[in-house]
Amino acid sequence: MLKTRVIPCMLSNGLHLIKTIKFDTLRNLGNPVQTARVYNFRNVDELIFIDMKASEEKRGPNLELISEIAKECFMPLTIGGGIHSLGDISELLKIGADKISINSEAIDNSKFITQVATKFGSQCIVVSIDAKKVGKEYYVFQNRGKINTKKSVIKWAKEVEKLGAGEIFLTSIDKDGTMDGYDLDLIKKVTSSVSIPVIACGGAGKVQDIIDAVKIGGANAVSLASMFHYSGHTSNSIKERMKEAKIPVRVL
Figure 1: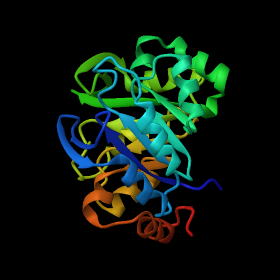
Figure 2: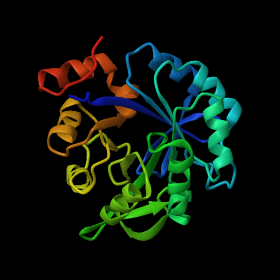
Figure 3: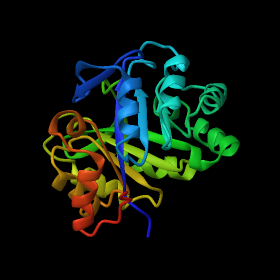
Figure 4: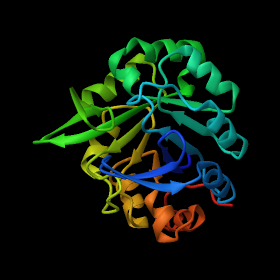
């Protein structure tokens, strides 16, 4: 049986680690390289690093910073933010990225998903979906949650799977940074619509939230940040509770 992954998500403004609340509030949390070093020693399964400002500021990834982060990682590393070409991806893979997360470019040019999957393999490409509920429906947003693309999250998830995405990184904008639980309805709708793995992100505040995201939502992995920063939990303490709940995890 495949193990359920616990994945810290590090958000950056290109230089520093930041924390967001519903994608709006930005708080400086310090040095991402030092944080990656800490996660490396704490038995996390993977690490996701996303530059939240890159596409908004119309710039590419900070290769120097990402290279330094990669040197600290002995677990799979996913990089996102400001990625718009196959050349960008080649550079990132050369300096230590294992997977690439794309968002805006996938929305603006969906053929790019297939191009990446064809050249580098589906296992390399993660499509990031930032979702927000408007009325009774979930829509895909971009540009740090500022633009409603009018795309249905469910339809978009199905489309990116068909186009070759190997995984979906699903973030609830409404839940981001709130620590009041994942949007289980959103997660369930997406996981029941696709066969590729779904990483649930946004809202984890206690271990039961994580258990619910997996057992009720059907998530294949959980991504979190606030719990690591503010609750005192480690990857091992979270996984021990998950194991007690009969969720298969990798425990050292």
